[in-house]
Length: 236
Image 1 (tube, rainbow, N blue to C red):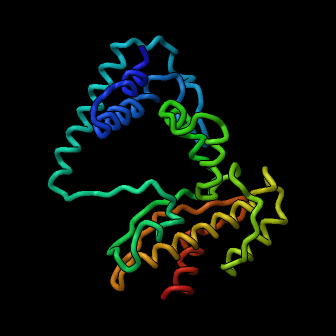
Image 2: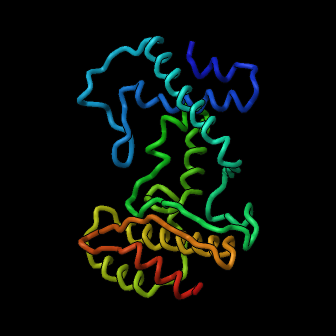
């Protein structure tokens, strides 16, 4: 029987069932003939396809569960954590103003990578999506760093540097004509993330962001400079 079905049909505590499911999902890629590559999944061309046995899955699952158990033992001495399944664009819905000492994160880069595409295995097998309309909803709610979301939105320019770069980009021949719009909406989303972060931080709070620059049509979009310009102009 499918291991995922066994986990779903178990009558244990919800927290334990969720951990079992997490460990199972973490093994999916290693146990199948597909791998994450670039902006999606690709067949493992250089690995000879083979039949995965129940023993293969059992060994890998036990190793994954052991790692989870070790992590739980280590985490007991480091305080409690609270996880919110929410978009960072709506941070103020969950976190009170002036209540956070520090924020550290690495957002999606403006590189057209659609993470709902990259993690399709986990999304479908984990039943986080059950039909393509669910997947579309996830894409539309994600940070607009890719071309598969809703790009039919008009926003006001908030960065002179970005505006100048987009004007130059319009003159270039691109592999997809929607790229300038995606970039505009990506930075609009990132500016909103900065606004939300500023609201949450206290007076002595800090925010560290790991960003990556992108280039289209030979034009570099310096994410670090664009974001720091907005932060300095609007918050400092």
